[in-house]
Image 1: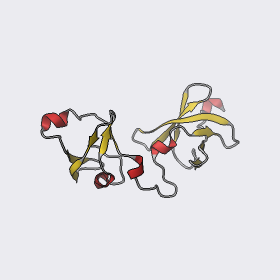
Image 2: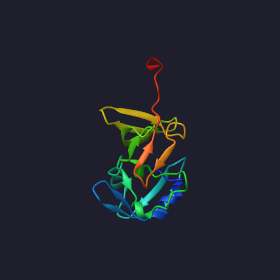
Image 3: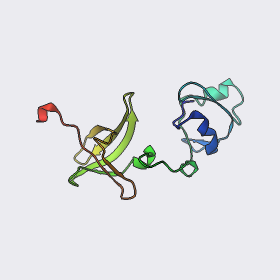
Image 4: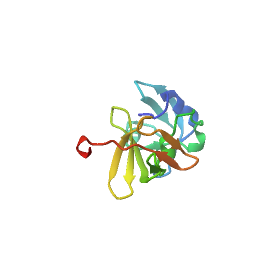
Length: 147
């Protein structure tokens, strides 16, 4: 399975994982594989057919089981829904998602006027993340045609 942890081995420390429909899966064995992948044995998944039924399934860890992030680090789930404004405090929209298409993390902003904008999740484009205040300050990229 593909993990979204600092190290695939960490997954075993967070307790059971849950499927999208709420079914809990207890990890019996876990071995890091390559990169961010792990080979996992779940209780009740007794053969290849059982395992195949989990293919493509999103599995979740309870937020309370995760360690607090370091300063300057964020759990993506904590960013979703935050209000986005520019450096002058003008509302732009809300954080709709976080993505990584291979070149780094990108924040998706659902614009207040409709549509969406994708912004690199770097200090240059997102200089302020204030989860306690429920806001993010973002600099939208400018097209050369706009200038």
